[in-house]
Length: 323
Image (cartoon, rainbow, N blue to C red):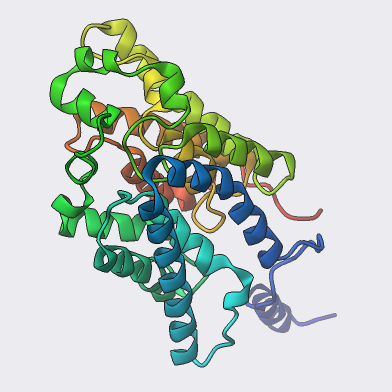
């Protein structure tokens, strides 16, 4: 018979044993995932270049290049393998560029791309460890530090069209009559150089869903949160609040739904947590647009939802494998 003391000690030893987490080998790689995501951004990037000219291409190229170089430098300083060939840094840099005005100065783009890697990823342990979507951290830092250089309407004032979310915030719901639904779908609106290319982003998002790189729960619930919350406000007073379709097509809503909210490191894993996450983020987009001081609430809404991800994972957790 095993003495009770020895048995108790063995139970404690078993409970304190640290072992690698379970893994399910699927044959997919980070490099393959990033290649698919970069391919999904191509339609929106092409539309941005057509609309804004070579300035947009320069911002995208500079942000991607700086992000890769800073990632390589950070890995070298940490004495880690320099694996920038997995394209994760390039993808993060381009996501940041998509949120920028097409005429953003080179120094602002460079600082933002560097912060995407350093502040958004490296300080938390690198790729896959960031609790908040890395490009959004850099965007928020730049938006708060250099508001004039990040202002969409101010920097793109030479265009004859306007930013829908800026017009709504500053001039009310009557001012958005100037925007045609089809024009907004085709990207004929001022905004982040890639984040406002709705049709291209939809094509890229559908591609990621069809190829299984993202699941439908976050994008669908995010869009549902936007539509339901804006629909409630619109139903209460349509003369004061914009209709749901406007909020869906304006700003960076579609970009956030398919590319920012679905960030693998900062979003929940379980189906129900993903649904709750998307609904919360989508609802907060409208709340920020209605009551906040920033015209487009998508970046801040997703960052707040990211911080809630660890709590959401506790909602009906699904254990890996079987008992």
